[in-house]
Image (cartoon, rainbow, N blue to C red; front, side, top):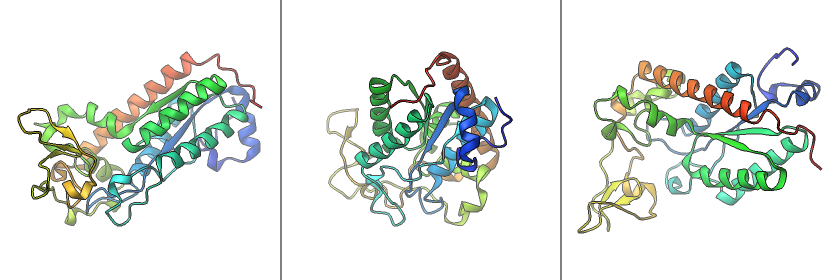
Length: 271
């Protein structure tokens, strides 16, 4: 493999990219969203973290990173200024075109680094289409969701602090992008209990006579007026550094396992 000046395809020339095609490298495709994360967090946070995790995991694993796709399907957050949502079908079409071009050029090993729940279904649909049409097996890494699973031992009670704009999102942003966190605007949120439904958590409401909540597809501000669930006040940069170490470490192991399992993928360009 030629010396790697950078792992970022977007910073490479076409000749540099042509040189790595025969090596059949793993290509990471960061996918984010532009959406609210409470008064204290940047609207581009999902994309910033997806790109950060992808780049650092690529540097440690021998993979390469495609330019980040910033916009995602964030329909439930459209009531908040700054949220720019695209339709799930639009995202699916974008991903199909992006992946189709990579496969056409000879890249056969692709991993989505998707950092927004609303993007999961379009990503899965594209992955299944690529498998059926080109025999390409696509992987998926979801940094925020991984963080929820990997950070539980760092809190007394994760269920009270975890959430959208809460933890461990706030800690992660404090560690990686502290200049973009408004500590002076950091606050939790009490759910709106004056509406037609009594919220339990995001998109879940109390059901009379049942201990298990039910799902109602309302807009997020109808449940949480400031856009935050969980408690961001326990966020610290040190906890965010632990998040980054664990999530990127997992991503490196995932890429290594995926690369070994797909080592015989056919690198020849598709028609």
